[in-house]
Picture (spheres, rainbow, N blue to C red):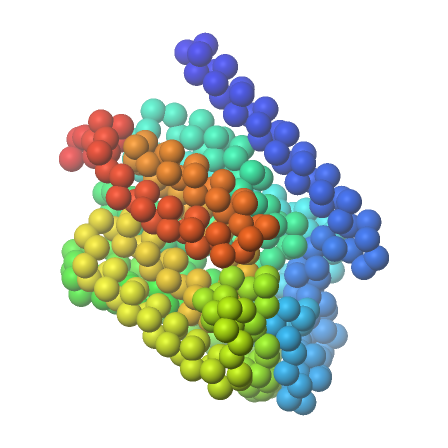
Length: 389
């Protein structure tokens, strides 16, 4: 018992040091003029304040048809994001940024705790503490928190999905929660909607599995959000959003900071506007095909949904460094459910950290994590729930 307590104390020390480092970096970035910390969050709050003032959330220049660079700072989310952010827009940006980071971290801690509890682990609370302790060392998550990006919440959203489809035995409550989370993040970020394809195909393949319930909950949630947005703000913001999307199609997406396949290809062999659009169409269709094949052919639900989540990251032309936060719940699930995979999960995290200096390595990290889902040698020995089954 004492050895376990000492081990947990070491994890707590790592967590304190890691989070203190993130807080220090955030504070230093905040001292810049304008602040370099929380700039993504500031866009959301500014859009929300425009909505509160009775205006539209979008830049008038974009509504007029101006095509910005993909790396420019502008609000381009669907109207419900700005409408929801009005709940926080009255607070100072710095306060919201701190709450944003704390909430995102607690969300991933909750996912770890629920995964450990579902697996029948001896001390789910300790597993959750270990997960929270290493989060600041996973740079895509730390960057998302420092920028105040919406992707910081991917851990909670995709974690709820992983719980719904991969934790056993299946639970109606987890299925509904996973569907609601996917519906919310699909409306907010669009590209996660490709996972609806995975759910639909999976429901046909495994009629007794949870995918059907998750799909219904996700679609219903998305429809409710859109209906509520129309009720609150009318059709005007959505008409503006269509114009913003139209303007965005002309944005330059080839950039060293964009890890998307088309951006990487364009850096090796320059493409004109038509070539970029054609290449992205091919990538998007390929991502949807991979998603469907994973649902159809990969029997293990965790490995299957991991492939689908990874494929969702390239459905749109831009893949920023922090997008793979969506795969952190997969890493937590592997660490909790499949101890044989822990070394590969650690390697994936280290490679992802190194990728901040050489962005193509991000896909190497994703590949290592997907390979780790094949490590099932000691599942039954380490997982009491699996052993009981």
